[in-house]
Each structure stands twice: as C-alpha cells, then as structure tokens.
Image 1 (cartoon, rainbow, N blue to C red):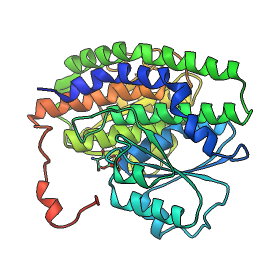
Image 2: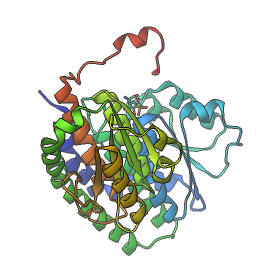
Image 3: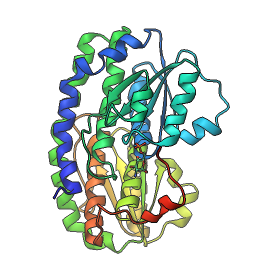
Length: 351
Ligand SMILES: N[C@@H]1[C@@H](O)[C@H](O)[C@@H](COP(=O)(O)O)O[C@@H]1O
C-alpha cells in the first residue's frame, strides 16, 4: 500500500522530470502569451494558492507584477477591473474545483489570456482553458497534497523562466543558470526528508503533547509556513496558525503558551536577527520552539543548509510535510479516510 511518505519520496524524481521537460513544457504557452505581458494573476485554493504565493518573489524578480486571489475573492469580493494584458493562471490539482472553474469562465467570457495548471489536462478546468499545463504531480494518491505543492511551485518557477526568456528579460544563459540551481535544490530533497525523519524521532514526545502548532517565517518562507500549517491541520489533525514573521510578535504573541508548538522557518541573510531573537524568547519564556533551516542553533532545531536561497522553499516544506505525516501516524490517523466525510451532504466544492 502506498503511504503519504511514499508520495513525499517521489517528489525529487517528479520534479526532475518537470525540469527535464523544461523546453517542451512551456512551448505552447510561450507562443500564446504576447511578449509584452508582464502581469500574472493567479486564482487558486488551498495548497494550489500557497504554491502561487510561494513562487511570487521569484516571478517578481523576473519582472512580473504578480497578484493572486482565492477563487471566492476573485469572483465575489474583488472590484478591480479585469486586466486586458494580464495572463490569468488558474491552478487546481483536482481540476474540478467549482469556483476556480467559474473564475476561469469569467476570464474566458471577457476574452482575456488564460491558462490552467492541473494534474490531469483532461480535467474540466484544463479543458476549458486556452492553454493547459500539466502540474507534473502525475497521480497523487492522497488529497493531502505534498507532491502537488512542490510540482506546482516548480512549474511556476519554470514558467516564469520560460516566459522571461521568450520576452528577452533574461538570456538563455541566465535561464540555464536558474535550471542548474533548481537541480541543485532538488538534489537536496532526499537528505531533507531523512533529516526531518530523524528530527521527528528525537522530538516526537514533546511535539505530541502540544494542542496547537504555530508557524512563522518571512519572505517566501511565509507561504511555506501557510502550507506547513495547512498540512498539519488537515493531516494530524490539529489546530494550526501561520504568520508572517513580524506579525507573529504583534497580537498573536498574547496567545503564546506552552500548549503550542512553535516552528520558525529562517534563512541566513533574511530577517536573521529577528528569527533568532523570537526563537530565544520562545525557548526561554514559553516552551517548545524549533528553528528550521540554517539559523538553527541547538538540538531542538532542525539544521540544514539549502542549496541556494532562490529555490529554498521546496527544501523547507519537505521538513514540514514529513513532520505533519509523522504526527498523523503517531495519532493513529488513517490518511485514506476523510475525518468529516459527511460534509459533502451539506456543501460541495467541486463540479
Ligand atoms: N484538501 C484539498 C487541498 O489540499 C487543496 O489544495 C484544495 C484545492 O484543490 P484543487 O487544487 O484541486 O483545486 O482542495 C482541498 O481542500
């Protein structure tokens, strides 16, 4: 029987496949998108949304203006005019999330540029879009997406590289340089997974006593925290919250308590002193806190050095995916079964 850990184990080879197909994967999109296009608008839910949020900083570095919306916000609570020259990207792993479909319909009806990223290019959302991109997750067995997140972030990074190369923002040499860096990152993922397994073995007793988890991070580690939060919440399950690093020390710090397990995601050179100071406070005054990444300083932390800063999010999320999975197993959770399966009798989210 396939376990969710097997899915996490498959991530490096699936990402390598996506990178190997870099040239062919974005050919159709490159021909479809006009060279002047510099606006990307993403519409997605849950993990798919977190993937777009994670890719944002890199896409902005490539010269794109990036926006992203939850489908309900895009459809019902957004009074901005649709942008004529933007590419609207609809991400849905399952390919049939109703509001994502309706958002795409709205963009299609306005005759604007659109594409979809789905696991299966035959899925309704992919079939409706002008251009359909395969997510590269192939057939992820569990609805608690781990492959889908890493595959979508990788696809978006490569999409940005392909479009920026096609419109002359970056040279072919720069594009190849990014590819090399991305391969270095993917090459680290097996090790990240093994380290997280060992870290969990050492800390499971403390962690399993917590009744809630809180995650904080800055830059592109903030959306990684959002994804870490949703993984633990849906899989363990446990109440979780994630905050942009600075926001954590505003209102939320009033609720800090020893009942909560804290994870701080940090990279050297990015809010380094802030991560270290918050970690010192949490460890000394509150209780359990683990720093994830190269700012780790003691045995409670999970130290690793990412291959590079640009593509580090997929190294960091590996730790959170493994920890959420291990906690779920410790709780006796059967990840093939929904906890509240009866919800579908009240409300449905797919077509
Ligand atoms: N548990 C899943 C999430 O993991 C997923 O991210 C979200 C969006 O699904 P999709 O990407 O198929 O539109 O739906 C569900 O809530």
